[in-house]
Image (tube, rainbow, N blue to C red; front, side, top):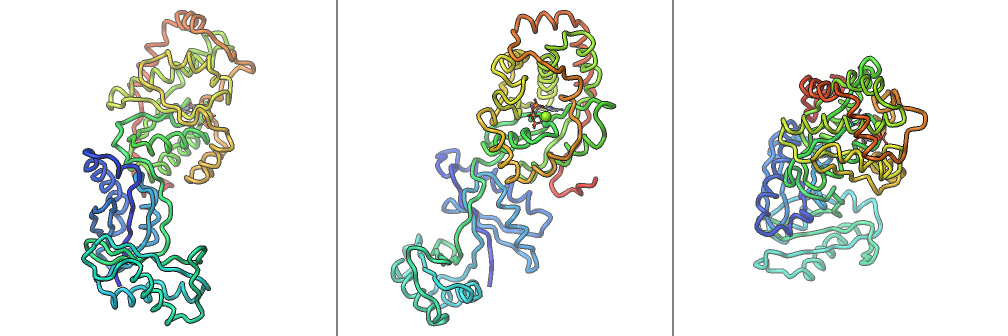
Length: 397
Ligand code: ATP
Ligand code: MG
C-alpha cells in the first residue's frame, strides 16, 4: 500500500494568473521542510499538493507534522493511493482503515469523483464501498450525521485516494509571496506571535534582536536564537541579526529625561532596524506591540515611534488581548521558550513612571540634545552579528 500526504490549498487557490507563483513557493517550502527526512515526489494538481515518499522507511508522522506548518495549506490529510478500480479501492480502504474501523461503532463513506471517466458515480461508490466495509465489520452502523469516522474516497486524475477526515492546516499564503520584512524579536511572548501572523500572510522574515551586554546575558541571547529556530519551522531558514545595543542605550540613559527614555529607545531601535533592513532589502518592520499593553504602546507613544523612520511598521498583535496572544503562542509552540526568565534590553533602565502621552515635539527636542546618538546607532548597525537559523539544527548549538 502506498501512503501519501495530500495538502489542500486555501486562499491561494483563488489567485488567478499568479497562482503558479504561489504554488511554486509552497512546493519549495514543503521541499525544504522535508529535505532531511528522505526523498519525496511533489506534484500539484486540482488545488492539491501531492506529497509522495519515495523510500519505504520515511517517518510519515514527522513528515505530516512538518507539512502541517507550511503556510498556504488550508487542510491536509494522509491518504492511501490505489488504481481507479473498485476492487482495488475496497481492498485498500480495508487495509488502510480496517484497524480504525474495528475500534469504533459508526462510520460513513463520502465519495468525490473528479475524474468523470470512472464508471461508478459518487452515490453508487459510497453505497457499494459502505456495503463492502460493513460486510468486513458487521458490528458497524452507518451514521450519516455524526459518524465516528468518515471514510473519504476521491477519484482524481492520477489515482484513487482513500483517507480519513482532513485536519486544518495553518492557512494563509506561502512565505515569500508578499515580500520580505524584518521582525523585531525580543525574548517575550508577543513578538514570535507577531512573526507567525505576518509570515502567514506570505511575508518572508528575518529577525533582529537588540542585546545590551553585560546588562543582558548570553542566556538571554540564546533564548532568542531558540525562538527564532522555533519560528523557522513555519518560515523556513532565516537570519537573526543581533545588534550590540549597549552604547546607544547607555547614551540615551545618560543624556535624556528619564520619563522619555522608553520612547526614545524604541525610536532608536527602529532607526537601527531600518539601517539593517536596508542592507538586506527588507520592505517593512514587524513588532509584537499591542495597543495600551504598556506605556510605550499607547497611541501617542506609537505615533512617536512610527515617526522615527520611513518603513511601514506592521503590528499584527495590535488589537489582541494578552490572553489571545498567549493562546496563539502555545498553539505555535513558542510559549515555553518565551517564558524562560531572562532579561530583555527593553526592561533595563526603564523609569518607574514613563510618560504615556509623549509629544513628538518634546521627543525631537530630547533627540536634538543628543548629537552623538546617530553615530552610535550607525556603529551598532554596522557591527550587527549575523546568526543563520536553519530548521532542524541542534537547539543546544
Ligand atoms: P514581547 O512579549 O514580544 O517582548 P512586550 O509586550 O514585552 O513584547 P515591549 O518590551 O514593549 O513589549 O516590546 C514591544 C515590541 O518591541 C516587541 O514585541 C518586539 O517586537 C520589540 N522588542 C522589544 N525588545 C526587543 C529587543 N530586545 N530586540 C528586538 N525587538 C524588541
Ligand atoms: Mg519584551
